[in-house]
Length: 299
Length: 299
Image (cartoon, rainbow over all chains, first blue to last red; front, side, top):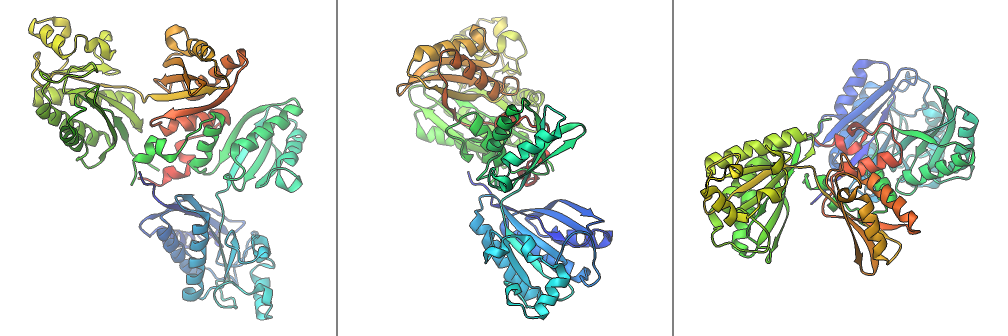
């Protein structure tokens, strides 16, 4: 039994209005054998599109390079505008290890792509998240401060702390690109057996990292169609798993005399996050990839 | 997203001693493109081998046919002997739907293979389990009554209720083969926080079908290295899921003042059985194949 190596990448590019430009860039991402665009969506107000690519590491890297090159040809940051903060035609490109790939390997993929984009396309590249070269570049918002226009001014003024990790220290019309590696994000909502959104807000405060709760959890309490919901992003399910978050929400809810009505996942979830939950709740001692029948189907 | 169609088959053949014969038969099962032998094991005392094949339905059927033909060449039931009951060189062949294949389709695969084995190899075939043509042939033990020698006598005596479903009404040296379809079987053991095997036996009686418990559950209480264990076979996890069995065992155990220490799966488990458990425990409203990232990787 041998499982394929799989990474995901979620490039964001700064065009959400011109269909022919969006199509052309998505096609560039989708033309490499072994990588596949499995989803993309565009937002007119944000003037931005988000693409989801999966496949073999080398193929995904090549696809990303072609998409970045295409976006640089077709998007002029001097005239681009939209509600979403951005510094480049291809704004941000996270690599996400999915199967048989370590985070260290995803970081290396990010670095290798950054070198290529800097050298061959002449686009300044900043490394972020797990690939960051400095603590203050872990957060995207720090790198994107002042957006395209502000970064251009800072580089022209020779500000050292804004120098890119790779590529020229000067912005062309394609702007700069942020490349990095991060775990898969799980968007996860829990509905409560109450319409009282105040309870959802209290539970959100209890479980989220920013106010003293679990690391890797962002949460807010909202009302959805008359039901109180704890709406969460789980930023690293390997460290802070779905089942532990669920059980903490369940316990907090019980304190207020309510229960979990049901839950929902938004977007895609790595299979392992669900298998981890099964293993934990069933108290299974031995869930390895080998015992799962389907894992014997693929070379 | 399109998931491949996958069936499993677990042919049992009546040779567990002569390595060159075993190898030859296993190779016959493994030579068809699109089907793969993922496991096999032989037992000298039983003089029997069990092979696990997975792949596309048509490929698995062709592989099974070749294995049955090879076993008929190499095994002479007039001289074969062993502890395990048997009526043929290839004794029994269950088809097991795994992915994107219905039980009705697995039954049809069994029937089609039965026709081919009867017509082209001249081997009498009995259909069993979900493919049975009569209620008294659902159970393998009914069909195998009297074993090879007894069936031969009965057919020679013209006993109508023993006529095969397909093929000649006469046994050659290859004997007869039983072909059918059944759900995947899950071998599942739960360890209790006690060494008192009497409690495990009481819990086994409470949860198993034969003594009034859950359908599709076989269970017994045993002691394993000083720990009480409820040892179970789950015969249809789609109807009687792993999580429901687990929670019933947990409740019965609590009645005796003990808890579940941990659990283990023996052999292979269909991934869906674990995903179903995750969905149930997390109360997820929307687990479809589309939301699982890995399902987008394969054509």
